[in-house]
Image (cartoon, rainbow, N blue to C red):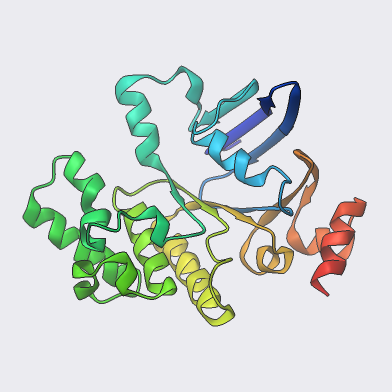
Amino acid sequence: MTKPLLEVRGLSVRFTRGATTLNAVESVHFSLARHETLGVVGGSGSGKSTLARAILQLVPKCAGKIRFDGQEIGALRGRTLRAYYQQVQMVFQQPAASFDPRRTLGDGIGESLRTNGCTRREREARVADLLVQCGLAPEIARRYPHEVSGGQCQRAAIARALAIQPQLLICDEATSALDVTVQKQILELLADLRRQTGLAILFISHDLALVQEFCDRALVMHNGRIAEQGTPDAIIQQPQHPYTQALIDAAL
């Protein structure tokens, strides 16, 4: 049996404010195969974005294990931890906010290449290649985030995520701030990149129809737990949980 690229077992994340404890993620189990696209769908507060941040260790877990390529990420240190952060990249909902407004897009895309020892000439060539791969003209590298459209900025953010050739791309509502036409273009770009590079994608969205269009499998999250999982078609055609039915009804 092929080893999963990502394996999450019994993951829980809790936040405490004074006497109040919020179970943001509770006993979540799932795996993601190499080259697979897995959708995580749910409304605001369902725990899907916290799940993504826990995988990247941006928020601490209180229970469970996360394994990437067979290694428990909580045990990674030094060089192996840096290698993990190179192999798992994230694309956020608001692309402009994820870039430094004082630096050009080319500088932002090339930053990880710089820290990995690439010369300036090597960085410029690689950034130009990445921009073309993501459907942008190389000249975009000289522009600042506020000088390009939302769709162009999201393409640049995807180029940045691909710069050091990750195995897993986490897209957290990466198309929700875009209009329908640009949204479709970004999904087509991600699908092309998956075919070209063999990326696995964890695709987080509130839109079940979008997940059905783009993903191989899906998890429905509700109140921090997985309400159900399966192929998007099966989930939509035969929902097993009332929350899933509510998501379907809301989309009609």
